[in-house]
Length: 132
Image 1 (cartoon, rainbow, N blue to C red):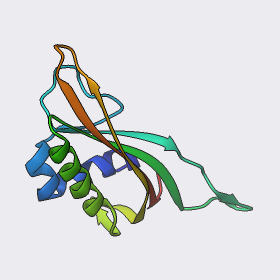
Image 2: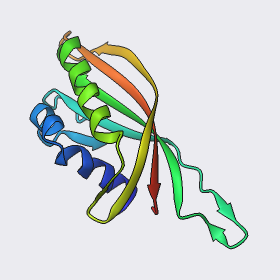
Image 3: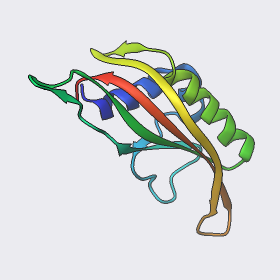
């Protein structure tokens, strides 16, 4: 399992996150008009450290996790559940994850088509993992 699939699977495997979003966790874009709340993920940087014999097995990847909801309280609750899920080390379906460091969290939002305001909690994570 690669990093992208493993991170999504990790979020969906957590009962707290799944209770809020169901299966609405996607990479890069949230389908327009899709139900809320939802999570989108985006890799911000993914350096590949290496030594004289090649690439290191473990590396840190910076990910932006956006929690979308109709209310500020729900977006914040979802961000807190996602952070609690991703911080501790674990292995899921053979993919090893180390500790995740939270580098920042921002209150954002936007007016969607139809005029409704959509709240967003944007969380920057630095996630240690082994392999691709």
